[in-house]
Image (cartoon, rainbow, N blue to C red; front, side, top):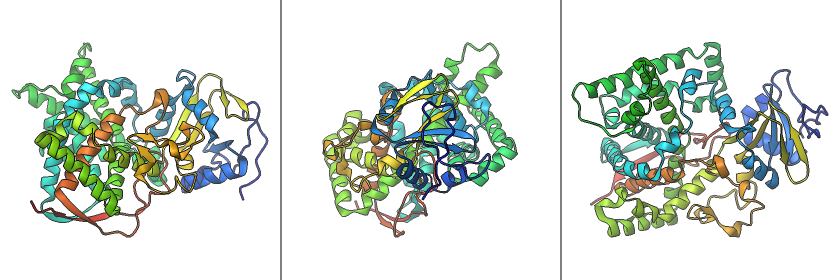
Length: 461
């Protein structure tokens, strides 16, 4: 049983139920960090679909009502800001100067249909390099291996082919690992050390990445062939800067932001997709059958052809379901101007400074049917109408409305390339008993609670 609610309004009219604070200045922060999904599910059971909770001094107006979720996703950015809330969430780890130089439209510019289609050969080539590194047989931990593959892929896509070469990618990885935002969501002790040091290691990593990016660019200027890639695109984008040092700084900071955004969810989603696919003979058989059909139809162009990939609908369902069950994202809107949250039972007038919030874990798994993994919960990338959900926003993978993830198509393309190539190349044997998403993680698609090692052996020709 949770403590009885307080009755202070905190500026919200009318006052919602308020979860009692445990410690001054901490509120329910420690309970939230211990197990976010369980804590908020218990609070929902005790206080209803909408309630207020204090987390380290941050006032979170949480809603899980179908109408409240619909309202949350429709709030205008200028009144309830997703961007400012995201900055507050990841700003514990990432130095502020990176965000100051970041162009908010860059993700959209890098993820146009034309550019994504152009990335496909690079994705395939990088997968081939990583598969070659694996050899004929061995073992790896799924999340670590896929994360490394995705990091190297990011350097290739969001910098250039040269950045993913052996001369550069491990040096880049060493610094990007220091900036890993995931640690801010799963390791409170590490983030406290980051705060105490004023992000000393993170700032040093940013400086070193800037040096590495400048060296890559200089190597090209010293006679390398012309490149039509993201690094060139960024130098052209900021070519109006009269001071070359400012241009180089903005280029590097946008490279950092692109790579961090790329890594925040996708590697864990692909890892779960692989784990789930090999966990049931029926899933594996159907996935391989779909890949074989497309291989027969498109031959060697399979993974370079956007149409061929778009036709692989079962792999799409596997990814959507994998994201749904492992999703640990907290959706936040920081109120900038007074807004009204209508949860269907009450209309709350919410003042600036409050965060309107939902945790996807709570509603994504809220029924016995939704608590189990089944690719048939989706028809391509849409939830099946047979689930009879009370509202489309009650289940979320890539978000809804204006703030839906712009990388959904890109994510499906990459997953199909990585999963397809791995399943065409190897047989896998799990070396773990039961893989479950971490209950501690707050933000993103969760890693597993325990390591998930796999043994692999190359298929016979």
